[in-house]
Image 1 (cartoon, rainbow, N blue to C red):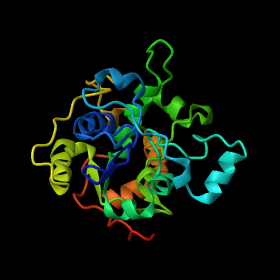
Image 2 (cartoon, rainbow, N blue to C red):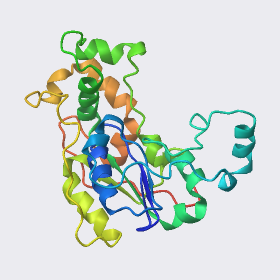
Image 3 (cartoon, rainbow, N blue to C red):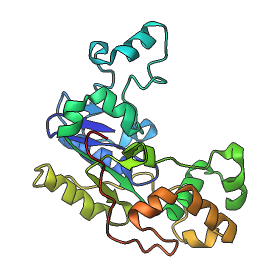
Length: 245
């Protein structure tokens, strides 16, 4: 994630939606006081500023959180440091309601059926040991489910100002940059694009059971953004919740 005080925006990074490419681009326009979280193995791709300011001054944290830390609580587990895929609720707590309400907040979403296949290849990279898609999807131990909604939502409501579409990411990113006054937005690099065979169509991985399972898992995203199994999505978006929600 990125919190830019220089440009007054907050980028909440979801999983398997092109978020790394967006974060790499955004880091090129960040200032020294902005929050930039670590990208792990993709740090080598970064041309802008690297990870910085991920540990807020503990004096700025809510009293209840400071007390839990003083009692030996783990800062990362308690959400007391900025993290790569940090959900909206702990992010809002660290950022503070003043900046949270004032800054432009955005995230990204993707057709859940397509996203799930991408996650499958990301998690099961070795073809020699890779289970078939249905086995992986239905194995409780595989932890195949992604919870992106809580990254841009709180209490079941979308709390960001814009959710970009993976399917139209370049155009949506440029529009988001225009909203924060960046006339010449940085180009989006292509990161994490090698794990999945490009020739495979995501629909071919599904049968009726797995199609329904993914539809049930991500019913909120499907309802909010109009996604369908055939890949056609209504170009409308659920309204974000009011700032006080």
